[in-house]
Length: 155
Image 1 (cartoon, one colour):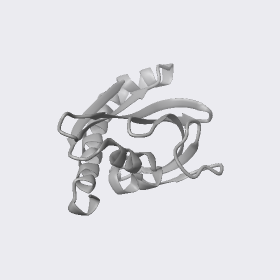
Image 2: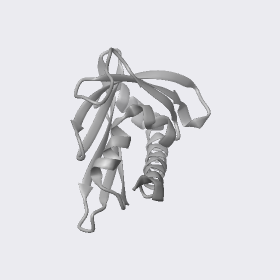
Image 3: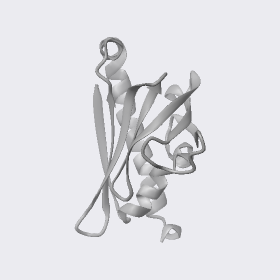
Image 4: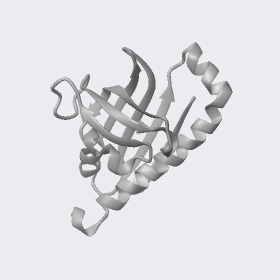
């Protein structure tokens, strides 16, 4: 199961990337993630860096922590991470930033569940509801980021 949402923002890719790739900002934009913090001495985005996110599923609960590992980290272009169950990735989140002709940036947020038996069962039993929720929340996240990077104070 996977999905993606794109929003065009009137801001340079690097400014947007700086907000997205600093996971400590996640709670400001995501409807479900309340906060996130770097782990293991990491102080910022880098391939292999780990962080944990404090999640309030569906904005009502349950509430839990997830451990994540950065899987893509190219300033101004992309940022991605895997949500881990133990040391195994179960869900992959990715942001791709593509400059537009007018100086703005198209930002695409996507998710992809790993192809495991557990995820296949989940996809059948409730996956479409979760996919719909993820798409809605990704759009909310990107619109919130857009509002910040396009505000007069952002310049």
